[in-house]
Length: 613
Image (cartoon, one colour):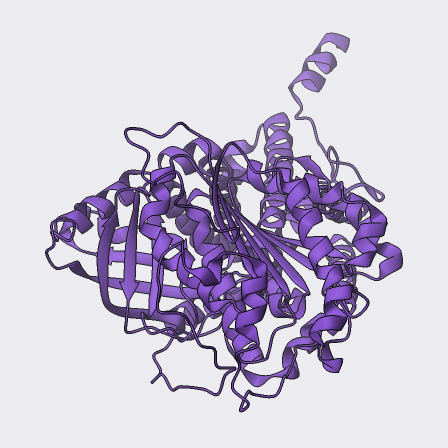
């Protein structure tokens, strides 16, 4: 008899009960409200800089929609240029020549209207802010790590409050689903959260990855917890046959597909696979979630709303037009000219380009690639993109440009393109509101620097820029890379008569073949070519000294009679565009600047545009 009872007890299924004294749905809802409240506080702190853009309607409205406008000659501070050209132009010789040229101004010069300057942080907080900019990992600052820690700490409360992962998988299901709207908001190009903060969407992409991993982890704990229970009870096949359950299993498979195909290997080797699986999984997981648990509908509808808004905005921002392709062999780039689009972006923004040509291959039309706009807003040439050869698609684009016979004196190749944008850029940080600007570019990162400098020169001629010193530092591999860019760089120096610009080009490899320039070609102090890597610390110190000297308390500033409206030093902006390593090194050099010098120039801010985000 005892043995029979023992056998019966052995055959009885094990019952696992999941229970929590807290209402999971209500708890997670209030946690999300707390996260939104923290975000609202940050938005309020950054509100003064957002409001500063309202000083002029064009500053607020630009950077949203691309369009074509009829160019009109506006009233500017007129300058007389010498007719000579080239690097030996006497206006390029010294900085004094800039000031002598600046005195040759028409008496009908426009009145100044300087943009208001709002610093990123108060003077007392500059030391703390400087430490927060230190790189924790390549491309990841201490500030970003702090944001991640705060976010994870907030979610740790519902994850462990009166429960644990082993006896309450329901809680983790709600945690995962509740973060859907944040994942979608941070993934979209028309990012509402980034817009409220005054940043480009790419600046919050690190949070998209973190929140996405939280969703994957939470949903796996939720799903595997129930699988564990059903296996112990021996009812897995019966439970999985339920419609709500297998929809939950489909959702679990979708999130696992997302994390698997989002690894760096897939993004680097098969980006289209990464993109297609991402879109497929996101679209499928939303109805699967509702079918699994109908009470999740509000979170799903919020996600659908954000996704739909992004799709509609992309449709509004998309233009189909004709582009002109010109190969630049010395730079290993393709110059894409789009004359039909000449306005609607801010300096530093980028567009997503799709080429509609059989020359790009069978599936070339399906690929979209981002490129920084290299031309000035409302320029005569229209939108200019500089596309560096960096993969199969860009190599095909370069070959397609060469087929036009442009190198041999023939006409440039014309192709149909789809342009989506503009996106990203400096956001609410107005370069023209600073006293000095330094731009550090690596290779094709020159696109960002060119557009920013051209915009500063244009605003300066219109009396709408506070910038007194502009420095461009460009690192290339071969000095021959400078050949196709020399006319444009020389033109920038010639135009910058009110605000002196200095351009320093550094080449990191020995030239292949004959050196492309004569020994006395670069006799100008405004345009130089040097071997090796730039010493950013010395360049920053030189620019700070010039900005301080030209300020209201400086000797040159008093002698030049600076405008009363511009009586102040409003900081140094450092723009860097290139590989992650370049951006990290520039941030490190900025962090080494003495606090006294930092205060003298009114603070230093860094805006970085890195490849590969």
